Image 1 (cartoon, helix red, strand yellow):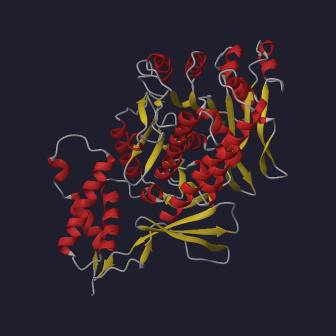
Image 2 (spheres, helix red, strand yellow):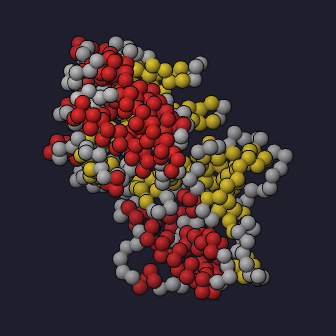
Image 3 (cartoon, rainbow, N blue to C red):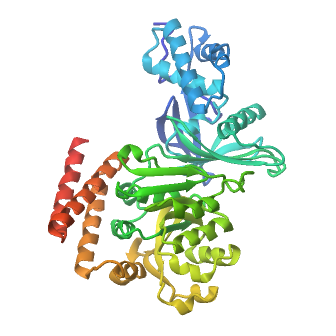
Length: 543
């Protein structure tokens, strides 16, 4: 038919030229209604990220423009009272676009109509310029520094990439309006920063906006993507973030409710790691979450007991009314088995966290720091936490974004613990930072390119804490650790990465352990291992 749209016929929405002598095509794939092409620029350390969309000009008509105009004249949104969240807007606009295309152009294939409708709905709500980055699961974070500059991004496979996509003043204003309405937070000269999350069926982001006078040269955007399908420990093992032995040790300690703190610089993968650990918890635990931006994984649909609280970010004007430090203190009256604190940022947060730890509350949290020592220094010197409080820490995991020949890779480089028995060493910061107090359990060996055991695992400070409460002989410990290691290794090798199957496997494991404890009192780890490996193989066959 004359007015059929060929999906393969696409046009550029940015201005990169075709492949040249210095520009070599290295990757191409689809992201929603867009085709992404990645070029290697021989004159740059950054790849070029290029976006194409469907060519909707046919039979003398620009069908996309026609659909957008139709959405602009629609009365559905104006007739309905109340606030529309971005997810609602996308669904309504996309539905309107599909209805229009079915009525006026029924000969257009369904998949082509779907793509046209998606492009037009983002255009109609003022987010078309950033839509490719929102919909591309390979984009981890994208940035806009100021007007007249182009957006650049961090790509999961290709690292830092630049684009030729910029934002007009009108596009910036529309994005700010949408984000401000979504967050119900103020942003103006008196409060020039805004940070919030936006969750839709297509993407989940944490976006930060800074405006003048704070942003001296114009509006600045930083949009971090949160994966719709979150990372699990087997996938993190597969991509080299950590190894199965380290994961097994962390699981062993987690099941004894030992506190785990993850330290690293911005974008290192701290929240990714604690989310992956958090989904390993048994389903009977009562878990409470305190976050200023919701980055944890919802788990009630998997029969876990989970209560999530959203507190004001430290930039928020309501910080005195509903801040994280106050809610941490209130945890003492909420009877949690496990607490997910998210990011500990302020001095008040740190002091409240150590207050909770000293009261017997433990869980997962992240802190910004270039190293474990730097984080301890920040706690004691800048946040005025008493060195004596550091004895309440259990496990500290350091994760870094390693950079080698311009390629970025997130890796756990250290797992260490605080030797709580050396009481005389907690009088001042110099003593705490000595090698006698901070005990390395796993450390990254650059030459061997592996995360290797640095201490006798059965005698680590955390194991000493555990042995004060639970009888544990070395043989049982090694058998349990070996079982967990084998489970993780097999799941990683079989690529059992998705969230539901991971939760299923570990719920099955804990049910089996509970059954053996009740019936036999002593767990047969060889039998447990065999049963669980069969369960994993069965899941793999069902894929």
